[in-house]
Image 1: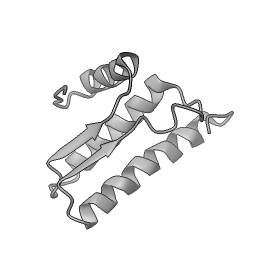
Image 2: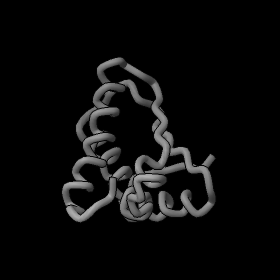
Image 3: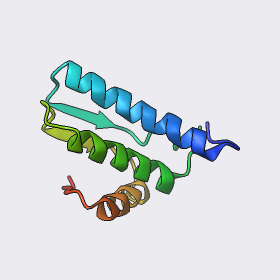
Image 4: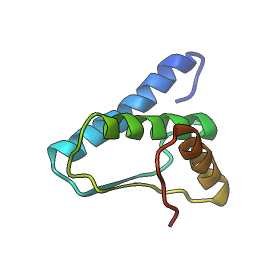
Length: 98
């Protein structure tokens, strides 16, 4: 839950993505999909959460090849999707919209 210790919240959210990506690598998955984790009832700011998510994926990709061919972010509104578009643009990694 978003709270007073913003840096701790950031680290916990990043850890969620890192753990899921590590598990995907361990299980040799071809794809993984993420919702906008913690941005609903837990009130994590969506712009901050999307940057953390994209940064975690970028770090995972840069750490070596694995079986993942597709990493999806499921955005349930156009507004949510815009946060991810901006995060991808800032990260410099390729994206495709579907």
